[in-house]
Length: 560
Image (cartoon, rainbow, N blue to C red; front, side):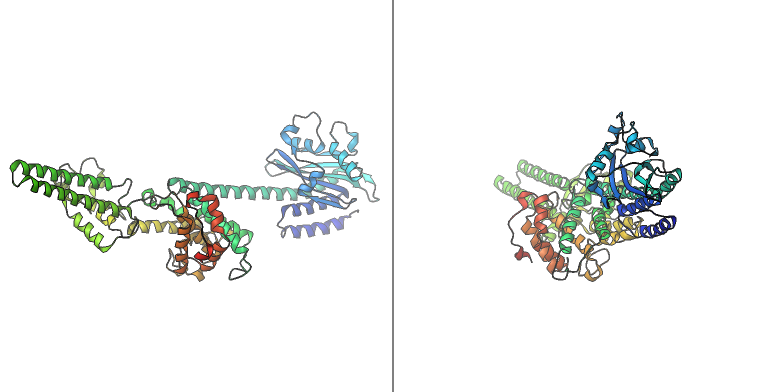
């Protein structure tokens, strides 16, 4: 078909309008390639992309005489991928190879009359399609930085009577101008891909850095995205119930992926000893050893006192021995209680707290100065330097002024009296603060409009549907479904992890029992929890990421 100027102009306007609406880059480029071919009445056209300066791929082809259009890998029938580094060493190259390697336009009135080019491609193409290729125009696509990003070829230019003619200089310029639109699309696509890869790489690097900060939370930021994706997929596939109409766009999936990778980015500000706190007395080290040494001192003092009484014959030997043994038993029992309370596996009772307070009042003699070998900052926190410099009596369990640093209280008795777990009130506030830091960090990032939900998804994973979560006390109605998915993913990963020093690894049955209780008490969304169980997401994840010894037989119906 021959095209006059008015037809080409009309087609240009239509193409320009459609490019703003088209989301598939190859469809957009095919319209440009067709339009450029129509401008010179070329019978066939071929569009190539250059990937990483190495692979030249035939992405689109058309032939109006044959009424054929091929996209993508369908063109492998005509031309497999060309490895450019290999082509550079060849003595005889095709027109498309020379065009890309030398960044030159090749205009041939007769393809087969040029013996300096390898014409195998056209020979095979003609034989395969019972076609005859005659005139050829090959043009490189060069971006604004001067790099070749692709190339186009047009075959068999026609005159007004439909006869084969050569491509003129004017046609060459016109085709080059129109194909610059394709170059812009390629360049923008490459930029989008590069920036997307840069963003995702930055996100993964940050998440891995957070995991690497603590040897005990090693893969949390990497595994939460896996669970979130599994549960979101199961929710989208629901055909009945409250989630039957739930859908996610490509942007929603991308936002959920980014949010799940970055949901704990605020933990970069949380001290390691709090994140990894395995016992109540742990800071950088477990201070139970310091307290044990004090018990050792009291035991040694008791032994010395016993020996002195023996030498002085203040009482019969049997009486003194019984007195000594009772003191040792008492110290053993008291240290056992302190050690037990330090673990935090079970909640403390009122009686245990009273016993700790009684034990704390026992005293030992400190002979060496507490002011030596410490920093000036620690010394400035001491309330009585004179007393600390000389020998004196000190409580067995202490809450000293110099044990309070900023917002942290490292008092020994204060920490041992934590009723549940190992984290005290101030440390819990610091841990919770990571959510606020996460939200602030993500708000500072200029996410495009389609990713505006990242902050909400990532910042709500500690919210509860009953409004008792943090940091904003959102209710279920105020949270999106992806945000609720994040909460379940975060909880399940934490419960199944076998690398946390403050808890022993749990069986899957134990984990599901805990989550069922969380569902019943308004912590997590019941509809998503049911999907989580019925779809087998918990099982699919466990088979891939949970230690075999933690996986036991469960009946899903028991946990609904």
